[in-house]
Length: 77
Image (cartoon, rainbow, N blue to C red; front, top):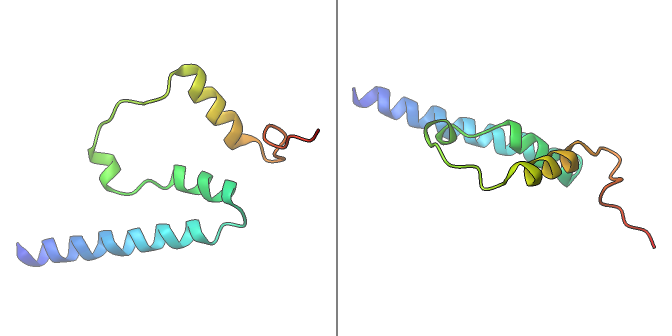
């Protein structure tokens, strides 16, 4: 039983490292955020938390993440 636990911990640590590396190799911060959002770490699967954003805030965040041309955040006077 102890060996299985050790292998599981090693596997999870290796997965963390791989996810972190994929995120760090993204060409810009926005792409890194997108990658991080879709590559949740294993402990996130077991923890249920209430979404801190309401429906309008969630839609705004999703629009910002989908804005590939940065039209929503580039403010030019």
